Image (cartoon, rainbow, N blue to C red; front, side):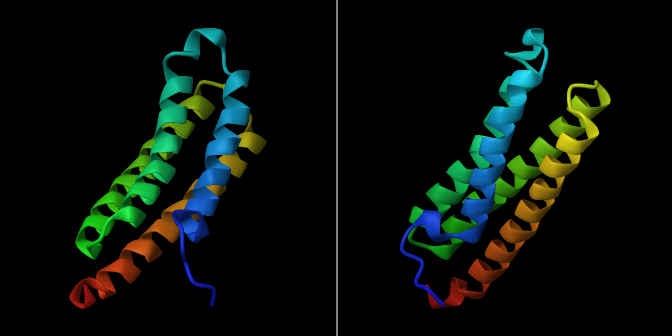
Length: 125
């Protein structure tokens, strides 16, 4: 197992980064009047995921790390809600929705694993 030296080595960050890129590539297809509403919210939620993972990684105590990982988890759930809205309004086609949604579910699972792993280390910190 390779040593994790940077937040970019975390699988949760790598998958989250894919999610950010996918959202940024998909959002321009939304109606222009959504640019500062739903499009902006989707982008902010996606970026918040990887930003909180990065910030959590830099924290010294596992208790602090976990707090940021939970914020990232909340951002994933927020993104999932926004994806449902975008799909139901017809802004996202089924194929794009399912691709992004599947990646968000994977990210959710990875973050839960990261949180669980961090919780086991609280006593060692």
